[in-house]
Length: 151
Image 1: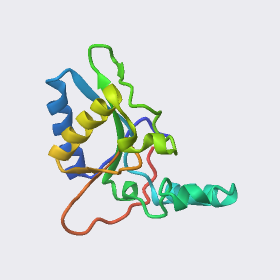
Image 2: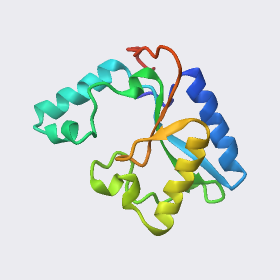
Image 3: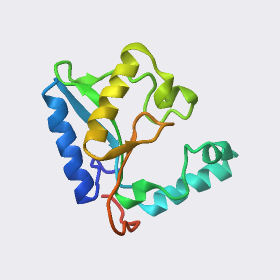
């Protein structure tokens, strides 16, 4: 894939505000995924069906209609700017298990998850409870899905 993440203008502007908010505390964001073409979502669903991994769809880890297709979802983590690396969020990005659920962490890991969630929510994002890294931005009015390849 391309080494870029696309978002709708409103979501991108809000994310820039989150980045500025975190920087004052020595933290930053690392983005894993943003806009995803409809064909990519359809391919993930087809893969789950083909490989017998329907539980990933049933349990909410793979969606047949994703806010990523709208350019309104972003997958990200926190980076400690002084160390130049990701902080420990308890699981790797895209871990499909209960350990990745927001509330499954404790101690420092939960504090990092809470810091990210607070900063994101302050700028209008909502966190998906089953994936500590997944946030959606709400817009008023129509939000069409796109099938634009990312190059």
